[in-house]
Length: 81
Image 1 (cartoon, rainbow, N blue to C red):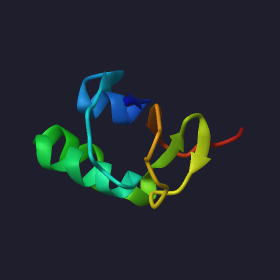
Image 2: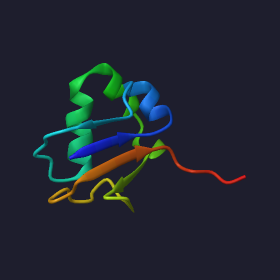
Image 3: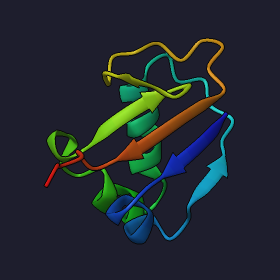
Image 4: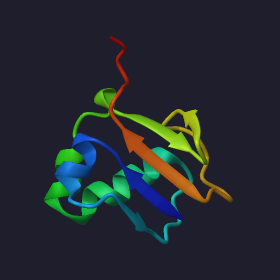
């Protein structure tokens, strides 16, 4: 699946996107896999309350299933102004 990173998440990880082969059942499981990769991922995913996730371009929760998913995107909450 493609994993996309936006705003400060992209800055901490150092990539805008990457292709990942994962057996993760949920977004939370994917996050656990990413955190275990390197310190930069651990830093980006240290506080999940500061992140939002979209699965196949639909706003989702971290317990969303990943079966058949093509794209997961991580980004900070949007604010209006």
